Length: 83
Image 1 (cartoon, rainbow, N blue to C red):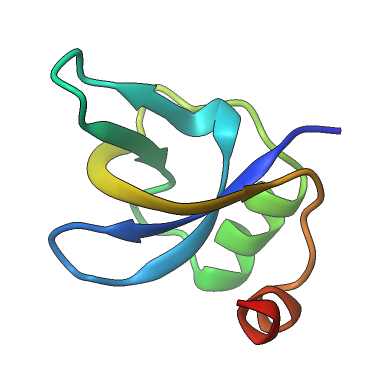
Image 2 (cartoon, helix red, strand yellow):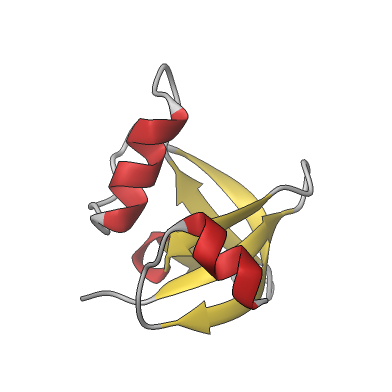
């Protein structure tokens, strides 16, 4: 089982749950995350997050700010209710 974080995407100010395996540092103290992109729907994104899927080379990376890290992936509604 992997670990996850709740993070804010800097450009859009949107909040997502992200597997920590998808995170990396740009070397300047800024965290970035790989995120599924292209023509995939929200339900497919949620599935990839829940499964802690391996990063695909076609995914784009985005600047993020980590709000909280945790050890299990729950549904988004449960996580947002606990913050």
